[in-house]
Length: 174
Ligand SMILES: [Zn+2]
Image (tube, rainbow, N blue to C red; front, top):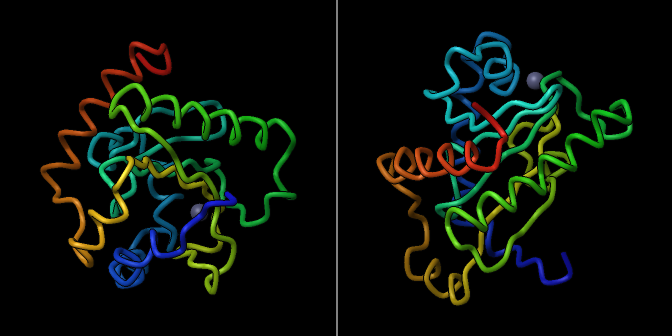
């Protein structure tokens, strides 16, 4: 994280914050809990695969074409309140997400981390989740040109199909 560039997060952050209104209309007030409780809707929600206690999905408001969220299935804000096997699975699935993006999108680098607390950029501070953002050489300049835009939904669906196919090859899902 030494090279972490806060500018990376800026273009989509306002959109993400605006999306919180939509989250407020969810069943539970937490979209991650809604998703966790509705495996039949995994395709609509862009959930890629589920582990025992942690699941992996595409961010609805991605910064790049490859932006994953990895979260415990249960509602929990505090990493230290997770049981050790939950924390292990969260870490393992985060790095399997990295490998998935490396294989699928030929990403050259990654930002991996969590935003803890709203002031740190967390749109959903009460349900812990990790971000994995794929990076390519020169993408910062690219995004500066496109500042404020985000990946179009069609692009999201196409990438989702690719990620599902690769996740199957990796044995992460049926
Ligand atoms: Zn939740």
